[in-house]
Structures are given as structure tokens and as C-alpha cells.
Image (tube, rainbow, N blue to C red; front, side, top):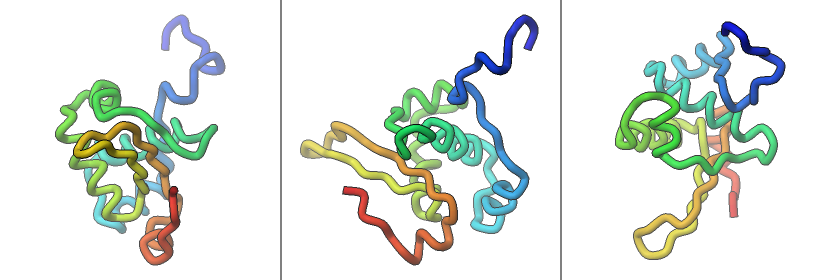
Length: 116
């Protein structure tokens, strides 16, 4: 990073994937690197409030993929217990969404939490 100061960077501007988390992903059937990156981005953006409200469009732009792929990745991460999603809907339209990263997906699948 020529001419930049790492300490001045916003923690949301990068993702960090610990080797143990990669092992967790693989053990739970997540082998797609883009999904891993998406989870880590959600985790980083949730540091202050415990959840993130970013749109699929934002994630697609950050990762460099389509919004449809983001939908698939989020759905898979949710199904495998890596995230929980709470949505406020008006008919079929989602007015707001909170995505909660989960630390231990196996425990979360067996012990669901109420996000409302």
C-alpha cells in the first residue's frame, strides 16, 4: 500500500480471515472464497453494533460479483448457521435488514436466537 498508513484505515475497508475460521468454513461446507470474504466483511462491519445493514449492491461492489451471487452466498451462510438475518418487510419489499454474524455456527443451528 504505497503512501498509505495502515493505522489510518477504516477496519471496514479490509477483511481478515483467520486460518481457524477457514477450517470452520470448510468443515461446514463453505468452500467458496467469495462466501468466506462476504462473511468476514459482515463480521468487520458488525464490530460496533453487533450487526450490519449493508445492501446486496454494496457487497457485490466490494467483492466484485453480482447481487444475485450475494443473495446465494447470504442464503447459504444463513442455512449453515454463519449468519442470522432479521428483515422488516412491507409486502414483498424489504424495508430494512440486519445481518448478525455468528461465531459458532454449529451451536447457533441448534440454539436459535430471537432477533426481534
